[in-house]
Image (cartoon, rainbow, N blue to C red; front, side, top):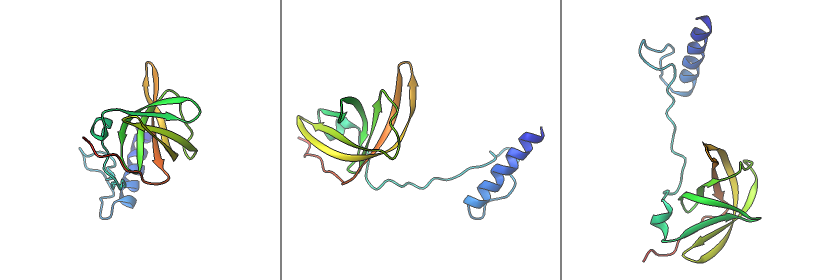
Length: 135
C-alpha cells in the first residue's frame, strides 16, 4: 500500500508543478494527476478523402504507408515497420495521380495493432505543402 501512496504523491506533485494553482493532494475520487495538454498543431488535419479522391503515400526506398490524416505541415500514416523518430525521410505523396516528393522528419512511431503488426507514424514536412482544389 505504501508504493501506491508514494505514486499518488508523486503524481500530485507533478500536477502541481505543471498546472498553476493545482492542489497538491488529490481528492478522494479524483485521479492522482490530470494534465491539460495544449494543442500544438498549426494546421487542420483532414482525412485523405477530404483532400482528394485518391491519396497514396510511400516512403522513398520502397516502404508503403497508408495515410490516416494529412495537413499542410505533416501526415499521420500506418506503416508496417517502426521508423526511428528524428530521422529525415523522403516521402512520395500522390494526390489524384500527381506525385510530390516531400522531405519530412519522423516525429513519432508507435505500435497501433498487433494482428497484423502496424505502426502509427507521424511525419512533419520540412516545408508546408498545399493541396489541389477539390473538384
